Image (tube, rainbow, N blue to C red):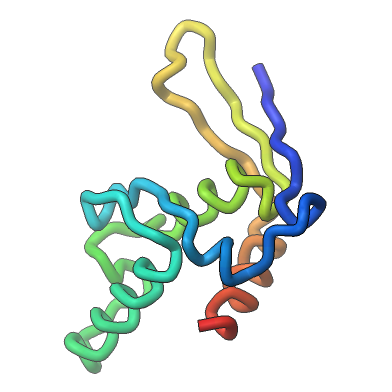
Length: 111
C-alpha cells in the first residue's frame, strides 16, 4: 500500500518553518526538531574531533534516515511509504536521496 503527502512548499511553508518540524530520531532516542538535530550533529562533530564518524555520528549507520523520512512525510521532498498490511508497524519510506541531500544542505544554510 502506498501513500503520498502534499508538498509543503505548495502551501507556502518556508525553510525556517521546516526547521521547526519535529521527528523521532531513533539514534538520539528522542523527538527533536530538524534544527536541533543539526545542532546535535555539529556538537558531536566538535566534541569528537578527529574521532568523529561521518558514517555513524550517533552510533549507527543510516542515521539520516529519520530526518529524510520527516521531510518526505511532511511533503518537503517527494516520497511515499510502503506499508505491509500484515505488518503495518514496519512502515518504510522511499524518497529521492539526491533531492533529500539538496534540501538538507539548503536547510543547513538557513541556520
